[in-house]
Structures are given as structure tokens and as C-alpha cells.
Length: 254
Length: 198
Image 1: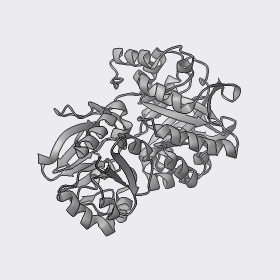
Image 2 (image 1 turned 135 degrees about the horizontal axis):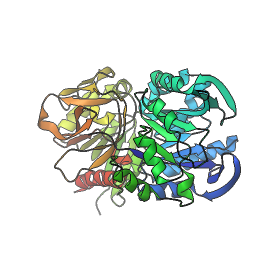
Image 3 (image 1 turned 60 degrees about the vertical axis):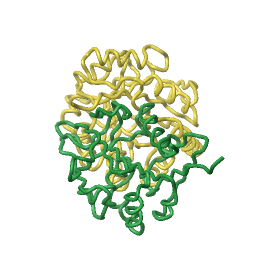
Image 4 (image 1 turned 90 degrees about the horizontal axis):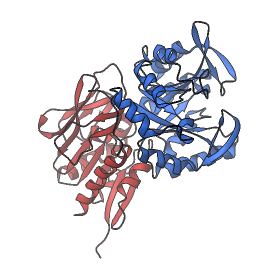
């Protein structure tokens, strides 16, 4: 017996609204985060991620309000990422109602943050969010929404993150993000095979079969999807039935 | 109309309890309270020990009221322990210093698996149909009761089979998070509340 593979739905949130676009460009409003999160829960999603892409202090406090409203009616785990820099940020997001926090740039700058957060709140709520881009034979870590290259090998950084206290790795392929060409299977497997914490594959989902491949070939414990659900290219139900058909263990939608 | 049934969550001050509050709040006739004082938390019709934080911190928060809480639970106070809250029903934990309530004899040990923490949806192995078939877990430690008599359900992470649901008198402990286990989990919480109201 083993854990089911998880389908994680990601919502980009800006100033309290879910937006859709290519990373930070051409954003358009697609709805209310609380309503969309509940909608995906009803569809059978296993988990929701809010990625806050607000740039302002106002956007930040709006996010906490959104997290609280969501937690009051969402009965699956909620992860919040984007702009988490300090233990105080972690505390605020968790107190608002998130179950996990995804820490990206700040963990690279200050790896101790992963340790501190996991000592206070437990490793199960600390997610190391890694943006990786292929560089020769391996992958390099980028921070600040992919704008700054860090002097880190992504596979090594994933291992280090886990040993510092992260209980999960959210691994985004920048090469594939938004492309719909499928997840970077090689990257996903390279990381999943060397860390002892769950790996969530992210970036590149174009179809239900891409999700199956990330798990089957990429050894990911979970896969993150966004755009292909928002524009109805596929559905949670369709992805889960393909996962089941590929003999992956899935949670049946209620 | 009689007074409301009071359900009190003992709040150790760590992490998210919003979804739990909402799941417990079944509406008419039920009042959900949060209480940080362990003795004040006992002025209630039912007690909920939530599932967030570390054992030693929670044990320290309990300390002044641990004895009284143990007495009340053993005397029949309906109690639901979730994840860490389940672990607190036991004597002690490998996770850290401090004592549990000692309501159920046994200890808390680390999961014997490669992938720890266990994060995700796992099967609840039980014949009891009131339990969810699959539920969400996020834990590194599990309970090991001295006697199997209290075990209602098992779950298995990798090759480690552990007690995922225990009960003793009116106390029930679940290692999973019902408030994060979608509709099946919420139904389980509401069944607990309805049992108290009856």
C-alpha cells in the first residue's frame, strides 16, 4: 500500500483575484480564488496552490484575507507561495489558514529559513519551491520569478532543501513552463530519485497524459496543473481517469 | 430550546485551524470555541485536540492542565484528537520532550519509512464504514499503543503499518486530517459532533 498520486491545482493570485497569463505578462482575470478552489475540490483535485504574484504590500494583505476566506470552506490542503521571506511571513500565512508554505527565492538567499520554519511548524508544511532551467548536462536554479540565476545545481539544491527541513519539493521546469509540451521528465526523475520527500512536478502540462508521464516516467508523487484546467483543455476527472487507467493509485473524487 | 452544545478546540497556537472550525460548526445548536487555556478548555461538551505543531510545544502548552484534562477524558468527556492531537492522548513521543495525556497507554514513534514526512492521501484499513476510505495525512510520527485493543483502523506507509484510528471510552484519535480529507472527512467530523449532540 502506498500514498495516492496527487493532482495539485495551481491558481495564480494577484491582488486578490485569480489571473491567467504567460507568467507575468498578458494577465487576465479568471475569477475569485475561493470559488475556484472550491470548484476544483468538488471536481476531485487533491490539493490547491495559491501562487501570489502581487507585487505590492496591499496585494499581500489582500492575499491573507483570501487565504482565510478560502480555508473556511476548502476541505483539502492549501499551499501558499510567492513572496514568503521570513518566519513571520510563514506564520502569517499559516495562521490565515494555509496548510503549507512554498518558499522559493528566500530559501536560496537564506537556507536557514527552511530549518527555522520546519522547527516551528513541522517539515510537513514547508515546501521548497525550485525553479530550474537546463544548463548543459544538468539544471540550474533560478530565483525571483526566474529572473536571477543562482549558483546552484537544482538536483543538489533539492537534496539540500530536504535535509534542511523542507518536507516537499515543488519542482518547476522553466524550460517547459507555459509551453504545454509536457513536464521535464528527466529533471523530475533526477530529483525524485534522490530526495526522500515528495516531489511535485510543475511546468509544461499540456494534457492528461503529460500528468501520467510525470508520475509514471518522472516518478513524481504529485503533479501541478493550471492553465489546461482553467481553459477546459482537460478536466480533473479526465486526468484522474487516465491516471487510474495507467495503474497509478488515485483518490476517487467524492 | 435547550442551550447550545459547546465544542471546544484546544488551540496550541500553531498553524491552521480554520477548516477544522468550519467542519465542526454543523449549524443550529452547536457553538465552536477556541481556547488556549487547557483547564478552561474543559468547560465544554466535547473537546477537540487539533493536529498542528510539534509534540513538545503542545505538551508544554498542556502542562498546567494535563492532569485535569486526563481525568475529564477518562471520566467520559467526548474527545477528538487529530494527528498531533491523537498523539497527545498517549504517554510520550520520540519527537521531543514532554508528556502526553496518558489517556491511552503507549508511545509515539517516528515512521519507519524512507519518505518521511508522509504527505498525501492514504487508505484507512478498517471495517468501520463511518471512516473515510482514503484520507489526507501529513505526519512524521505515529502512535504505538501498548495494546491493540484500542485500534480501530490501520494505515500503511511504505512498509510501516501503523494505527491510524484509535478509541478509548469516549475519546477517538485519528492520525489523518479529516478537515483536509474533503467531503468524507467532513462527514466524519460531523458524525462526531452529532454523536455529542445526541
